[in-house]
Image 1 (tube, helix red, strand yellow):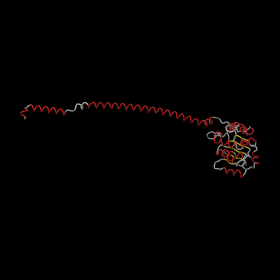
Image 2: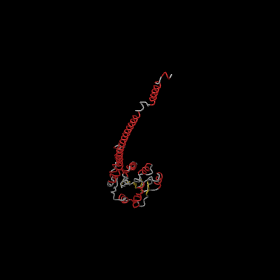
Image 3: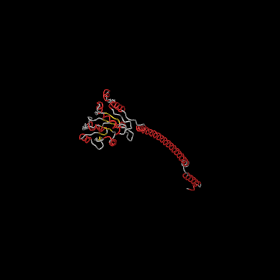
Image 4: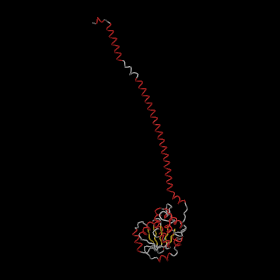
Length: 293
């Protein structure tokens, strides 16, 4: 068979076999150009990602800066509001500290009564509560001590205290803003009181029933207390105005915050309530005189 095919069969078979092998060994035409293209694409994608990250950082920085500015502005506004509020709270004490002390007068008490009763009572009822100048004692001009003021206002005190014999009543009633102030006032009465008996009428460690018992047991000439406790005693009739002749209000005294008795809302309310329990009627009848110390 080989002789019939001749020598050309071998050569033809080799060429065809070699060419076939070489065609199978060579890499495909599509894979070779993809390698450099994929690197370029990766580089471009990385560049794009980096630019996006930079833009995001810039936007985040801008937003942080804007929020800081807004927080500073709101903080400044809030601090300004707080300053204004603090100033509003301090205006009362600032005005009282900067203003010179002015002695109280009957007009001050009358204006206080008028402003208080104008909201709750009719015009006719307000006229019934109005006090004349004859209802008032001479007011303190800020030059007197308590003893010197009372000696001037009550020149016949020794005789008056001897004539007083009623229980559940006093001759001289002094009204203060607090229990501590009442204790100080009692200490200042040593020169004036003589043999008179003094009673404390405030809520510091003393109950109302105990004070009623003390007032009903013996004769008391002077009582010093707060408006709230005196009002409670008048309501329960433990204290009456039958023997009362002098009602002295500690009007000009100022506490540590430079507030007077009428500058404290609670004390002012108790004072006005206390005056409504028969004291104004006694003043209008001429049996009681009011003094502003």
